[in-house]
Amino acid sequence: MFSRKKIAMVAAEFLGTAILTAVVLAVSRSNIGIPYFIALAAGLTIAAGTLVFGLASGAHFNPAITLALWSARRVKTFPALVYVGAQLFGGISAYLLYSYLMKTSWPNVDAGEFDGRVLAAEVAGAFIFALGWAAAVYNRLEVGKAAFVVGASLALGIFVASTASGAFLNPAVALGARSWQWGTYVLGPILGAVIAVNLYALLFAPVKELLADEDAELAESKPAPAKVAAKSTKKKR
Picture: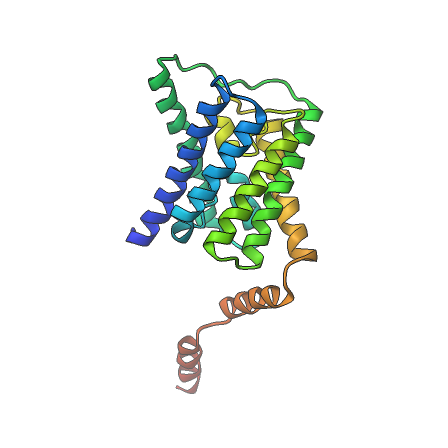
């Protein structure tokens, strides 16, 4: 049940999200904590994380991306739930490490007030980021190219979102930054990512890739040949 591969998948999502959150916290709360530096740091972190952990888990590092891929039937339900749990735990762990190193107290989570502009900014930024993710997935880019596309897309998404929001584009990072606001920093990235991935699948994904997905789903829905043979044998008896 707990094979090396499965443990590696969960560990990769936890570590990747924790490292991303730690980098965002360190840069955003430093003397150079302006959106451009945060975007570049986050983009480089995602690119490096994809190279390191991509073959182990797919390197989502973001509940919004995992849920978007799940909505497009690229990830099954149970693995998606496990990924999201590992990612959120990674965000919390990163803040615990940051608060220990900085000798800061654990503040209450900032629930904040709903702001439509912040929601729109998070949706737009996550949309841009997830388009890059969808391109990497549906075009089956090799790890190096996928790392570049995903990292660059995240940097561009942060550039856009930073005009009106904290530009987290990631509920796990928002949790680590103590900005767990359901109507903006949680809902916004999920909406943007779900729309982007499904739109890309509908309009831009290679037809052969979609046909391959349909064939795989059809094969899963059919009973295995051994089972069919067993049933036919029972009927003859």
